[in-house]
Image (cartoon, rainbow, N blue to C red; front, side):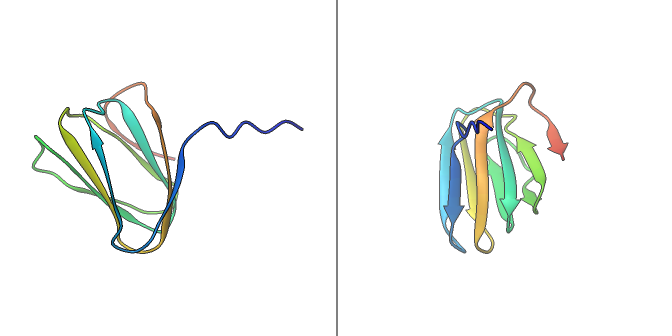
Length: 85
């Protein structure tokens, strides 16, 4: 068996923040915990739970904050729309 673990995986403590700049198309996937996401240029915020994903739709700054201890992956996406897995 060969494993490919090329996607960035981040462990976030409750309250910890990750900022992404000009990341249109980037996909944020909550593996464990929950994260709050807000995008510059959007009036709508997003709360992801385990197994849910979001694709950044706006240039500018995107802020991801862990609401509790969380694991997320960040990867290039194909479209800028909300997803769920």
